[in-house]
Image (cartoon, rainbow, N blue to C red; front, side, top):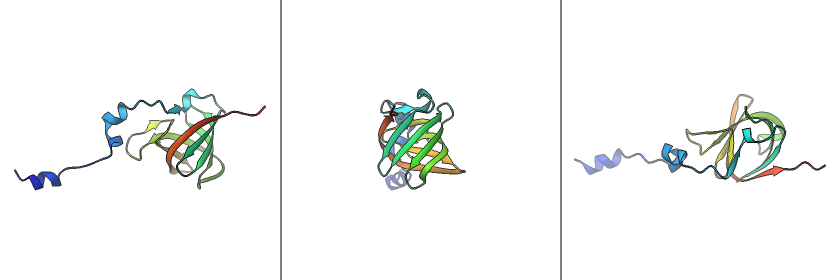
Length: 124
């Protein structure tokens, strides 16, 4: 058997693209929208931007979002979830180290990686 032929047939991919890696992830450094009260506010810091997110309906992922170059003012959108830019998506989740996938106006915006997530408390 030709070793060079075997080497040319080798495919490499990121660990996050493997189902075993994805399914064994602890999912502890983040939040699922359905666990947040409607109208709660989050501050999500990514590598490049700060996103202010108001949860309209956590069960559906409906949000108001402001931040980054695509959302200069609060915009109605749907948070699809978090990914590593591959084929797996943690539905309606926001997790440190993952990209957010946000749908609005028939477009998909993929943010840079999330660095920090904070609950924003209303001043009363």
